[in-house]
Structures are given as structure tokens and as C-alpha cells.
Image: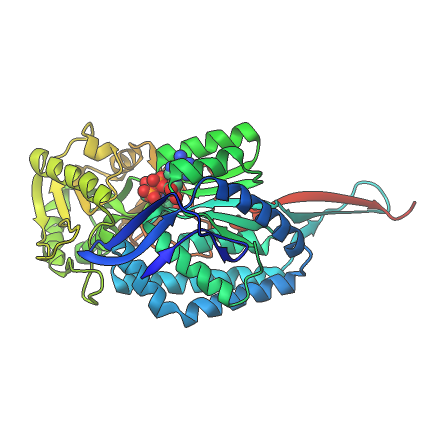
Length: 478
Ligand code: NAD
């Protein structure tokens, strides 16, 4: 049986104050592994390990750092199948999607590996004679990385890879429901040459070791992805200590379908954005705003397309959606599901497999008003609501009628209306004729309003977060 523990200085920590068994959310009697939750004292040890590793790591040349990241990419590639299988068993993401997630992690390592030999600053003309002025990225030191369970492989890598290439060391606190996968990733990294203490894994509850990390650890920055409530608390604690922070939080993402849209193609893309991963993506579509004139045709297209949304145990290749990740998730999403059926009118719904798992049927409803909690709160499950609108201006107002601002899509062939929506939507990622999910790793990722701390992840933006600019001026005419 796989037993996950904290890993400090590349060694497993045997001390534990609580053990937890993990069962497959697709088959609740299948034991996947055990987690040995560490006492808070490991966090201090992780700090010591990370500080000392960072001092050595920062002496490496860019090319040497780059080589380590390429090696990590190759190591993940050699274990792609096992890792995808474990991730899928631990949190229920369909195996085909989880394989895609591993590939994304590999690409992220390669992308940031190449940054080791790219320019890391600029020269800036001086106003004085004989002065060479330049600005250069410098490492921050030790970075705390706190990750959620919904992308157990890709999200940690999109934080850890840029943190390392910028010369930092890492203390990584994964979500409880993604700990086995995190532990396995660490084992892969260590057996492929990860320097001691460069990444330290701390296994435990957010309110215990997570809080200890934020309160009592000598960190230079924190990158967090998770719920809005916890994210705001992370931001507050980091701001008080005046350390850099980045918080990526919830979403309530709209997709707008205008009169001239291709209803069949739009329905296909919207259901993919809403129901893959059982709707458990921060960028998942949850509100669908449709011009009145095509509402009936569009509903028919959704009902037809729902036939392809097969809910099945995550290991089955045919699974479009698997179970939700945990008992907590099941209770929370089921409450919204019941509410939607009570207060709305069902447009389409699917059957769920006859398995002992956390399965919830994908559900499309209409007749929910904009004052309803379903319109306002993040469900993080397979549920969308349809709302009619009269034109692109009103649709954009409805799209913006939320405290979140992560991703938004419009479906149309009208260039002016598409452009109107792109320009006026309050979201960090705006898209035309594409689902709200699926933003690429080489582009900035993040949100407006309560979705994010207004920094961006991935692409070149991550390099700015994981480093500090230092400005140099040399008078060579002295
Ligand atoms: P969560 O906030 O419950 O947990 C996230 C992480 O924070 C976990 O590692 C958890 O252990 C830790 N944590 C919890 N309490 C803590 C505390 N007091 N101190 C320190 N750490 C603590 O979120 P989750 O349920 O794992 O993930 C789902 C949420 O993540 C959804 O709201 C989703 O929208 C969001 N999410 C956002 C993005 C994005 O990029 N915007 C991406 C994926 C998921």
C-alpha cells in the first residue's frame, strides 16, 4: 500500500500524529493508500532544509538549473501512466484527462527549463555619461506553494517549475485529497536527482501545517491556489508580513451565446467547459447566457449533446465525467443540485453509473433568477444554468454580475459583438468560440475581482512573481 508522508531533505518523515486512509471516489471500497499527517514541527524542519538548499541552488548556472528541469520533465514522462492512474484513483478525474494533465506538467517543466538560458533582465539607457544601467531578476529565497486537489499534478508544477528556475527553493503543502499523488511525484523527482531540500513536501491539514507555514515560517513568498475564503486569509497573513503572495481562487464563469452562433458547435464546447472533470475546474462554465431568439434551438442542441456526456468510473476510457473528488465535495455539490431541481426547471440531466462512488449527474437548468444563490456562488460541480438575454450589451452586464472574474467566453461569428464582449468583460481570461476552461500554459493565467490577487501565473508572468528585480548602475568613467 502506498503510504504518503512528509519529505524533507529528500527523506521521508516517520513521525505522524494522525493517519488517514484514502479510498477511490469511483469505488468507495477500494483503498488507494494511506496518509501519515505530520505534526506542525515538520514545518520548521522544512524551513531549515529549504534555506540551506536554496543557498547552494542559487550558485548553479542558469544552464545547470535548466538541466534539472529537463530531467524532471523526462522523469515525469517515464512515469506518465502510473502517475495518471494514481491521480485518477485518488481524486476521481477521468483517466484520459489525467493523462493530459501529466503531459501538461511535462510541457511546463520544459517551458521553464528553457528560461534558464534566456535573458533575465534588461539594460536601461542612463541619463548620465559613462553609466551602464541594467535590471536583473534575483531569486526570492524560499517559496511556500499551497495547492488544491483538482489539478493534483499540473498546478503544483506550474508553481514549482518557475520557482526553481528563478533560483528559489520550495516548501510544498498539497491538498489532503491530492497527497498520495504529490508524494509519488516527489519520489519520482528524488530518484531522478532532485538536490536535497530543494523541494520539501509537508503532509497534513491546511489548518495545521498549512497555517504553521503561513504564520511561523521564514518564507519569502507564497503561491496559493484554492478556495476564496482560504485565499483571502493567505493574502492577509502575507500582507502583514510584507512578503510576496499570489492567490488564485474561485470562479463563476459565464459563456454567452449570441444569435448568430453555431448552436451545435457552441453546445459541444460549453458542455465540455462545464462538465469535464465533473465541473471541478476553477475555469469551468457555470452560467450560460443565451440570446432569446436562439434559446429553443440552443436548448435542443444541448439536449442532443448531453448524450455524449457519459458519467462513468474514472478509470474507464469512455468517462466524460467521473465522480466528484470526496465526500465533502459530494455533500456540497449535491445540496446545490437538489436546490437547482427544486427552484429551477430541468433542461437536461444524465444518468449516473450503478457504482458505490461519489457520482452526481450533470445537470442543466433554467428559470433561476440572478438573485438566487446558484447564480452567485461557486458550485464546483457539474451544474449549469441558462439565462436569456436580449443583446450583447445586456449579456455582458449579466456576465459581469458576479464577485468573481476568472474566465469568460462568447460564441458568435460577429466580429464587432465579439470584440465588445472581450473589451467589456471583467475577467482575466476572455475567449471567443472556445470553452471557458483550457487556457494554455505559455499564456498568463489569472483572474480579476475576487478570483485572484491580480498577479498572473504561467507563461512569462510567473517569472516576475518568483523573482525580485534589482537595478544596477555602474559608473565606468570613474
Ligand atoms: P481549499 O482552499 O480548501 O484548499 C487549498 C489548499 O489550501 C489546500 O492545500 C489546503 O490544505 C490549504 N489550506 C486550507 N486551509 C488552510 C489554512 N488555514 N492555512 C493554510 N493552508 C490552508 O481549496 P480546494 O478545495 O483544495 O480547491 C478548490 C478551490 O480551488 C475552488 O474554489 C476552485 O475554484 C479553486 N481553484 C482555483 C484555481 C485558480 O487558478 N483560480 C485553480 C484550481 C482551483
